Length: 259
Length: 200
Image 1 (cartoon, one colour):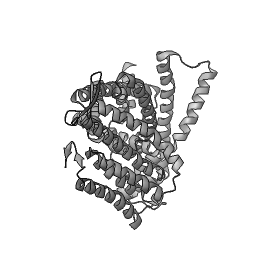
Image 2 (cartoon, rainbow over the protein chains, first blue to last red):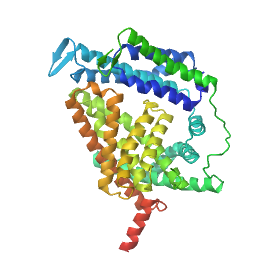
Image 3 (cartoon, helix red, strand yellow):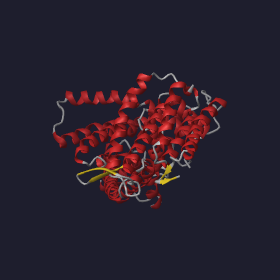
Image 4 (cartoon, one colour):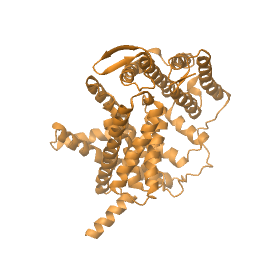
């Protein structure tokens, strides 16, 4: 199951194809890998298809928008092939369309990889494994976790501020200038409160004996085992296989150079 | 490298990271709307570029308030990571882009050896972050496939946005915060107190 894979290693496994995918400008490579990622997600996790589609579908439109922009503004090194049609000052070529579709598929790959990560990862465990496996300083780790824990309280504080303003007869702001002023009226006190909290938390941590030393013991022990490496190998290995396949079939295109 | 940092400075930086992660995420959707609005005019590529500077602001604020080595880099990295944790659609990729943006700002502060935090330096840091992030975007989102004219135009807009929305606005927000007195225990707050003592 993906949700039980060590989160820090999971992140690395996802980042590797995420970065390497940026080299490819053909359609075949991202398309096959996208299919693999989606299949892998549903085979090894309990994410409901409905929820996944709900999160994924907005990005399809986004990807189409980005593809369209690329098609219109293709650079000379990519805009090869036949001219399909022209309008205004734009010239749409087959090369441009290919690159557009490729970039759209690439961004959908990123989204699919991200969803696989986000929907199966517990944020506290993620931070803990960053500390235990990747040697993130404990001071930083617990600082972030403390800050993260305050997120829900901000919402509450915002409500309090709003009510306080209203009781003094300050309504909704009108116009752009009023909006900016209103933003200031909320943002500064909210942040000032956050800073006070930071100071208090730091004092509390120190007074309870937190020194930030790295040779500490952990309540939640995170580890990397055989199952974690199996996940890593399948995600990265599948990417290598896709690259090899696309090279063998003659589709591979790296930064406009066909192989 | 975090040896000379006090715990409260680290926690403050983390909280900045968390707060701005939320703001960044809000601007992500705002940018989406802006882009949709500009699409009929054929200006869609500029939708994000105009507000891109906001994504560097935490580097500027953290560095300006704390004034220690690494503040710009780490705060941006935290903001990126927390965005992933609260579920940004951009995913773990964001951690890399955050690190690169943070590095862009950090380089400028390093060049002044963490001694000069004037408005000019802060704006330079915002611009440097813009250039770094553009270089990464060029690679990652395949901007290489776009025409040079569009690339130069979008880069220019992003750099200006970095100077104004990160540099100028970052300084303004930090100064406003210092005025409330909550930063008394940090470098910027101390500077403000000295100024007040002198004028009094």
